[in-house]
Length: 317
Image (cartoon, rainbow, N blue to C red; front, top):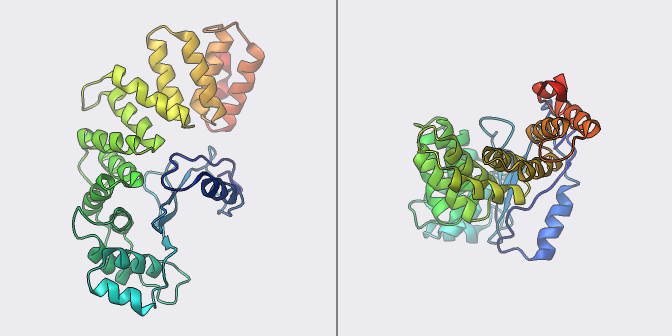
């Protein structure tokens, strides 16, 4: 989403149970969605999880801030004043409770009530066998302080249940909390496990994050061999940071041609770091014949995207 609030790019990480026509419809519609203007020079990414079972997590910032803002949960199910839904929930139907709580979280709902929604979500997600969407929403409620105090430790636990039940977004959120130590004790081993699960579920952000943990080797042992295919999967799905990570690892192997190709690919996905790295190689003729004109153009684009190092020009990289 660019600074004016217009959508620049839409990427589908995983088709899930949606048919190709439905997925294409969602992606086309998102190009016309209205978002608030902002001052993030590199733009912001928003994640929208669409589940055919009717539970949908609303847009939330995932890449331009350390903690995403409160996201209201949406649903295609019956309205919260539907007596049949309330009755089913009171009789222990967890899906009904999840649907009811989601409706309560809609700001334009006739029974909008975050506190009651959280209490209802506790009925929808009491254990690890609960619906993934319910536990994901409950984790969001605790992480973001919806309907009560913020409790990221509890959020991490609910995300774990949702992740194991197949919600890739929950894997991403749990892994991010644990790897950054945001409101919980940092645990790279658990974060890696969560991101690896999310990657297998089709979330390319998780592939990149798992690759980074293995590449960084801050707490878990560094394993560049295992990190490379994770970075590559993320890059193939359009995550620019994945292309950067894979390119760096190929440079370590002196595969400059392969590294440059990955940086160029990442630049196409809007990664300022990829643009800067490609500019350095092209200016110096590393991995390909020197192309100073393109190197300057890439540096200018990277500078415009907020990479201060690129603003000095390719000759200084």
